[in-house]
Image 1 (cartoon, rainbow, N blue to C red):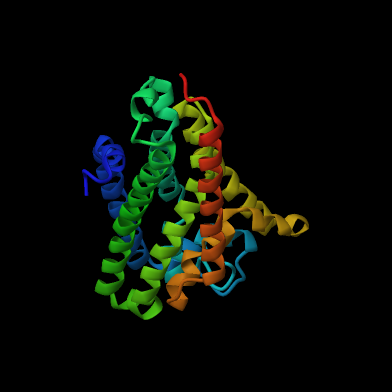
Image 2: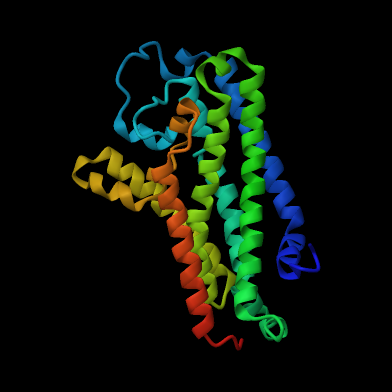
Length: 274
């Protein structure tokens, strides 16, 4: 496998320590969320009046379309899957692997040594995209495993959250990461600096979350929610329903495919000279 996909393996090998740290950090963080959800009384977190309606804007913090309240086990676990720490960890991996696709080699002046026969530009993009997908899957496996073990071990969580829902939330999370990765890959294919690519990933994540929160908090701009990947990434709903929302998953994957196609087009047209 390594001889067949050397560029993908090289990208992963160079970032193996970073990926290991990110995976371990996500696993530990999700375990912490499980501990908080099960050991801290809900009235200590949300107050004694849990029957009061929760503002719509709070949906952004629980990863729900409105079906699951933040003041619930599913809402707390969902909050751990849209927490800024969770977002930052995934954006770090996406930005780093996307930058490695093209922009990093252009910046270092090594691109001309790589893109020679029989290594075509298309092969470069395909293998580096494969490495990015593998990294996203690895990180989501780590986070999903932590939640899965917590739900399996704690009867109260098991009653409120389905194990199939934990898997569904992990699959939907992969779709979210790929949705961000698609446009970032396009930036890498056109850019010349790693900072440009990493900045694009941070911008998509931060602006996307802010747009979703604003759309939920202010009815006048409610339509803007469709522009944010966080509108389609609803892990709390998946935890309860036990299924992956196919419509949302289709949108997330469509953005990824369009981004990769744009990256291929931009890479074919650009000058790779440093």
